[in-house]
Structures are given as C-alpha cells and as structure tokens.
Image 1 (tube, rainbow, N blue to C red):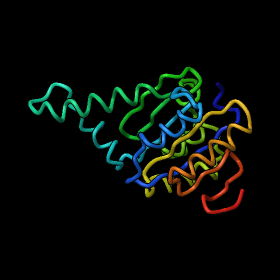
Image 2: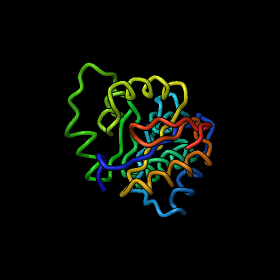
Image 3: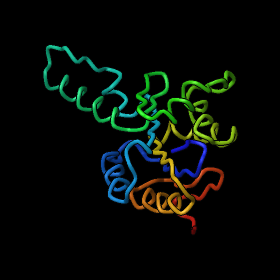
Length: 174
C-alpha cells in the first residue's frame, strides 16, 4: 500500500454512521489498514476521544471511550487535528508524521497535503472538513479500485466523493 498511489475519499456530515461506511468498504474487499479517517475536532466521535478517561468513576463512559480507541487502532490511520492521531500503517505513518513539513498550513490542511492532495484542495477540503465532519480516505492498489471506492463512498452518503486530483461531486456523473 502506498499513500501516493491511487486513492479515493468521501466527505461525510457529522451524523453519518462511520462504522457503516467502513463495513461497506470492508465488504467490497478494502482492508482497514488501507483506510484513513480525518475527523473534525468538533465531530461527536472526536469528542469521545478527546474527553476519554479510561479509569473513571463512570464505567459506561470509560467503556465507550475504550471501544472507540480500540476501533480507531484497527485503521491505517485516524487523525483528529488538535486532538490526536492513531496510526497503524507504515505508509500512513511515513506520510502523516515523518514527512510533515508544511508550517504555513493549518493542521487539518497539512494532514490532507501529506495524504497527496494539492495545496489548493487541501485548503478547500480542510475548511470543508470543519463544517462537514469527517473524511474517509481509501488507499487503493489501482485506478479501478479507486473508482469502485468512489461509488461505495457515494452510496454510503458522501457529500463529495472523488479520487485525488479529479474532484467529482457526489451528484456529478462519473
């Protein structure tokens, strides 16, 4: 897997059930290690992680936080700008941590630039991410897989789904 190869992404509102999006990708043959999620710090899931207290006097909240952190650790990467990140994949680790050298951009835009978006797209999507809530990014082995992932992301409710460099809105014809 390479973060610089073919990839697809979908932008989702805060109320979309991300586990359902991931299950659709898994059923189509995409492994969790090929998936990266970038969540707005205001996303409800980000709030659970930000406020996580594993050893707390409220066992139900602790269990929810632990389950969420465990779920995040199954993916190639999950990034919540200003909150933290979970990285399992060496390819995502290299792109998101080792090669981060974009001081003029906000944290969210730097993350997107590291994933292979152009500077203009990283800024545009970074701003949109604050409003929309979540991005699901899928690293693919070939262009055909990226096309398949785009269609899956659209069917799972993406407001925008495209491959890198070829912005196709969710409503536009492919």
